[in-house]
Amino acid sequence: MDHGSMMGNNEKSLPLKKEEIAVIAHRLETAKTKDDLCDAIAAEVNRYSLPDLQIIGGRLFLEVNVLPEPYRSRVRPFFHEQIFGAHHRLLLLHRSKKSNHFGELIRDRELFEKFCAMIPEGCFTWDENAERTPFHYSPRHRLFYYLMAAFTMFVLDQPGHPVGMPFPGGFVVEDRDGIYYCLIRDREKEVFFSICNFCPARQKEENAPLHS
Image 1: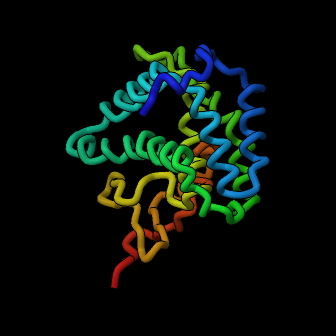
Image 2: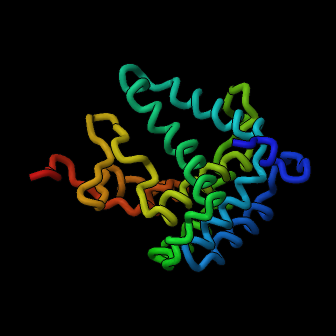
Image 3: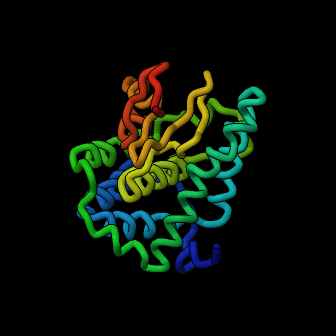
């Protein structure tokens, strides 16, 4: 990956105000097709510098590091895939122009518009001053998380959390012949900024078998 090209005319990485994030979210919302959305997300992602990605990666590492073993070791690669795996696939599709087969309209237009409307508030949910970390994780970095979720859920039509990702209790995100199931899909409704509320996965009931 050519990280130098990600700065674009030596653009400095500056904090974003809520109004600026709202403009970006509206720009995403105007996309009609998956190709349009892929291009719009890539345009925003290309504004992130290598130091930005290092901050995002460092914050992710610390968030996972507080989880108990052996769950921590099991789930860490899935969190990495959720953010940086999606980032890699996005850039590959955009740069190779292989996203042209995504000419169809974005699935569930109403849900997509609700997702875009949530982004500005979601980016400002965390109180960074209350958290002791060596990384200044700004709303701009939080936006990157939502950009990756938008790509995964509304361009690829895949769950926000990767297939196989384990949750406490031994449950995982599952793929059953192209239909996705997740135990926590409908359990985050009170958390307005949770990507689970916009995920294409279906709710799996506890103890319900998925395989015959």
